[in-house]
Amino acid sequence: MACVAHAARPYRGGAVATAYPPASEAALKMLDKGGNAVDAAVAAAFVAAVVGPYHSGVGGGGFALVHDAKSGATRVLDFREVAPKAATRNMFLKDGKVVPGLSTDGVLAVAVPGAVAGYLELLKTHGTLPPSVVLAPAIEAARKGLWVTPRYRSMAEGRLECLRKDPEATRVFLVKNEQGEHVVPPIGHLLRQPDLARTLTSIAKSGPKGFYSGAVAKGIVDTVQAGGGVLTLEDLASYKTRKREPLEGSYRGHRILTMPPPSAGGVAVLQVLGAMEQLRPQGFGFRDPEALHLYVEALRRAYVDRAKYLGDPDFADVPTARLISKGHIADLAGSIDPKKVTSSLALLPQTAGTQGSTLTDKPVTLTPEPERKNTTHISVVDKQGNAVALTATVNYGFGSCVVAKGTGVLLNDEMDDFAAQPGVPNAYGLVTGEPNAIQPGKVPQSSMSPTLVFSKEDPKRVMLAVGSPGGSTIPTTVIQVISNMVDSGMDVARAVNEGRVHHQYLPDELWVDKWGLEPATLSALEAKGHKVRRVDQWGDAEAVFIDPKTGLRFSASDPRNEGLSLGQD
Ligand code: GLY
Image (cartoon, rainbow, N blue to C red; front, side, top):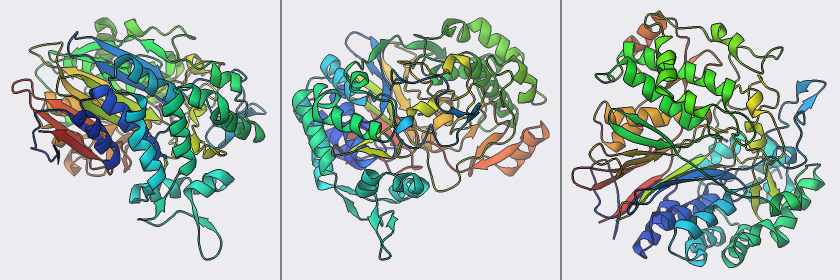
C-alpha cells in the first residue's frame, strides 16, 4: 500500500523519489508487484522519458549504480551517449571559432543514444520482471498523454525557438495559438505521444533491436541525416553499454560509492568531501562562513582538476586513482588559504589543453529564467535493501529539439558535453580540456553523480541513495545533501531542501541559491574576496534514506521540482 511521503513519514518497505508523480507511481507499482529496486527504477526511467521529455528520454543516456543487498556488491552501468563514428574534433568550429548553438540545437548535436540499451541491460542483469510489465506504465503514459505543468512550460519557453525549428518537435510539443503561431501549450493541456507509445511498445516486444534497428532506427537516422547530421544506422547498431567499477571513498566513517569517469561528478564528490574532512575533522558547521569558504575553495580546485584531467578513460589517460587519493586531496586542501580566495586566474595557466584558447574567467551568460537545464535523477530502495541511484539526461532542455520522424523519440544534444574547443565554455559555463576533445565513439564528460552512502555500522548496507540534475552543479548538490545529513544531522527531506552554494572554477563566481545564505554570511564571504552571484536554478535532489538503526525508509523529492516521494508500508 502506497502513501505520499512528507518529511517524517517512514516506510517499512521500498521507497522511491523521482521528479514526476507518474514515474514514482510506476516505480511503486513494480515494487507492489514483487519487483525489485531495479524493476522499479527502470519503470520510473521509462515513464520519466514520457512525462519529462525536457530532462531525459529514450533519445538520451545516463548512469546507474545498483546495489545488491544479498551479496553486498555495487555495480555501475554507463549507458551514456557516445560520439558518432563520423564525429570530428572540429565539427563545431568555423574559421577556428565555436559556432554558437551548433552543439546544442539541431541534428549535429546528437550523440548515439544509450538509454534504451542501458535500461534494458539493467533489467536483464539485475531485474526480475519482464520488459512488457516494466514498460507498461510508460506506454500507457505516452498513449494517455502528459499534463502540461509549470515546469513543462518553463522548460519549453526556454527552448521555444529551438523547438520551433524542428517540424516534428513543433507538432509533438507545441500548439497553435489563435494567430497561428506555435506556442507552448497552457498548463493542464494534455499532450499525447502516440508515436512514442509505438516506439516503447517496439522496445517492450523486441528488446534493444526494437530501438537500435528496424523502423525506429531508420526514423532516427533519416531525420538526422536529412538535416545534415552524421549519425548512421551503424552507429546505432553498434552501440554498447559499459560496465564500470564504482569510485570508492568515505566521509566521516561512511563508505561512499559514486560514479567514475567519464563522469567528472564522482571525482569531485570524493575530492571535496575528502578535503572537508581533512580541513574540519570535527565536522562542518552549518552555514559557518569560515567552513563555507573552505568548501567553496575545495570546489574551485576540484573543478580545476576536472578541466585538466577528466574525460572518457577509454580514450584519455585519466589519473582517477591519484585524483581521489588521500595525498592529492591533502595537497588540494593544503593549497587553500583560509583567509582569502585564490583567484581562478591564478590557476589558469596550469590548465592543460587550453593554451592559446579563449579561456577566460569572465562571467558567462548564465541561463536566465525560463529554464533550459535538464537531466533527472531516480533513487529507489526495495524491501530487501537493494538500492538504485540512476541519473539520466538528454543534456540541455529538450535535448537537440529534434524529434525523429514517426518515432516520437526526442534526440539528445550530448555532443555539447565535449569540449567543442578545449578551453571554451559549454552550455553550463564549464570549461573542459584536451581529455574531453571530440573523438568518434568517445563518451562526453558528464557531471552526473548517482551516489550511494553506506551505514557506519555496516559498510555493505546502503544508508542513502542520492543524485540530482543541474548540469555543473550536480556534484555540489550531492555533496551538500550528504554533508547536511552527516555533519548537521538533518532528516533527508530537510537535507535536500536546504539552500546551496556552488563554484566551478570558471567563471570565477560564487553561485548562491536565492534562499541559500543570510546577508551576514554573504558579507563574510565577500570579505574573503568571493564574487557572489544569486542563481535561481538548482537541480532537484532525489533521495532515499534507510535509517541504519531502525531500518525504516524515508524518501524525499526536492521541492525545487514537481516530484513525488513514495513508499510501501
Ligand atoms: N548532460 C549533463 C551532464 O551529463 O552533465
